[in-house]
Length: 125
Image 1 (cartoon, rainbow, N blue to C red):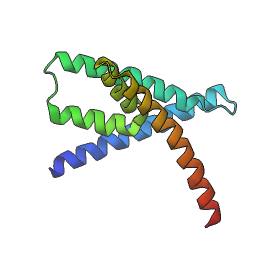
Image 2: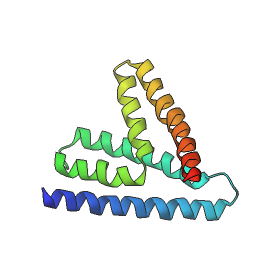
Image 3: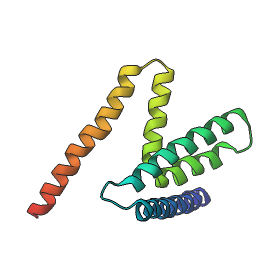
Image 4: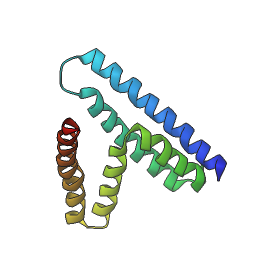
């Protein structure tokens, strides 16, 4: 168990460093105020998550432990957005369209609301 936690932490560290590096590089290259670096990381994360997931689903290349380190550790740190989108994909695959839309609205809409609330509360402290 300790080894798995170490592997998750290491994969998370690599994912967050990759996110920081790629996002920063894109932002410096493009410039401007719009956070394009974050958008690029989220989009690339979704592409890689889907590509690697579908490839590994058809093969026995990596066992479940290593897959969880990759998807929870690396992708969890690289972009949780890719995980949300993958979960929406699973709901859509199960013809649960309303739930998929609900997840998107909940996490984006309610997340934005709570971010604004947190900022406001933080300014009061």
